[in-house]
Length: 96
Image (cartoon, rainbow, N blue to C red):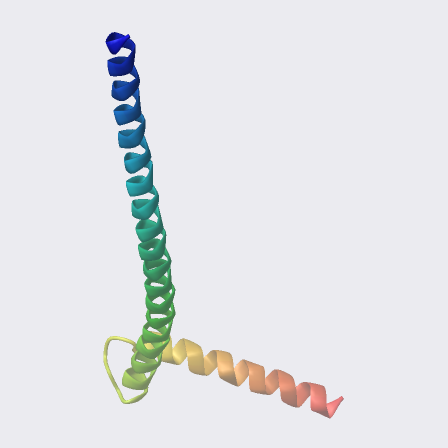
């Protein structure tokens, strides 16, 4: 009989260890989910900031070229020509 009692005690100990391990893993999962949500929020904020910075960069390039920067003169000329064509198109539509 003592052999059966030892087996039962051993099983109880193993089961208790498994329950402890499950509880530990559940806590770790919750912590990881919280960290993931935090990281996703940071990624979204950074993506918005990148978009804003790209827009600012384009604006600065255009401003620089309008101020006589050598690097973007061609782009500026193309943009001005495009704007002139749009204005001409609008005038033509108003004339009709």
